[in-house]
Image (cartoon, rainbow, N blue to C red):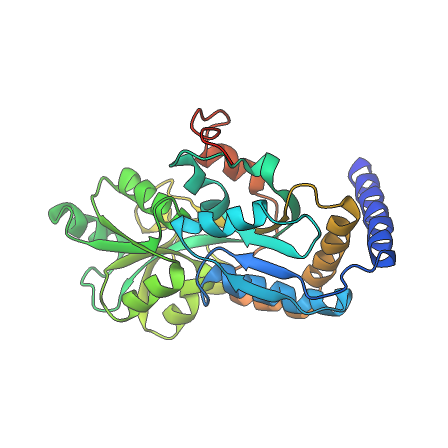
Length: 315
């Protein structure tokens, strides 16, 4: 009963805020969403789907601006320092908004320097390989990696990305050693995997499932406690022989600090409307997506609550 009351109160406040924002003429022009990864990757794809379904509610199209570099940090900082008027927004994942900042001196703090708008998707990562890699299953892969330490290459977004942390986590859990090859996003890494230039990726379901289904790459396991509904024939890591290897990626939207609450509520209301649409939910499901809350828990997992380096430097 208390949860229902809270939902009703939130919905009412969001409606009032959205009405206030609309009365002030927002949005009077197309807002820009900065995606901190390359075009064609999972963050870009999911952002474009969400923006498409928010458009009818807001009466404006969205401009998608792919600002890559430094594991997503450049795009995030652009939004954190933008004018807080609702026309420059950020989407991203734990790599761009949490883990990359745990590896470098930075003045950025997620809770302080960005205003949350909506958490809109989550998907597990999948261990995939070039089609010609010899091991037939995960147990054979781990045995081959142990017999050839440092030989295999694993690609993904830049240092500090969630793919990088996934690679480190896999090595820790499996007792293996890999060469991590950083890219400016998952899309170019996937192109090299398809071309056989790298051996492995620990990639989001949204990015790799279409290629797995097409038989262009092979999948060893999903890094989740349960099988993925969109790929029910794919075993979990535990089922394939590697216990406790769980890693998922959420996607969220933020605005610059100081953005008026009415504008954030307008955007949140439009996003929630879009996320309730059956067509969007089906498109997300086909890409292995779920809609759930993970932000705070993942932040605690990947980054200590007190990091002496996180506030060094100046803006």
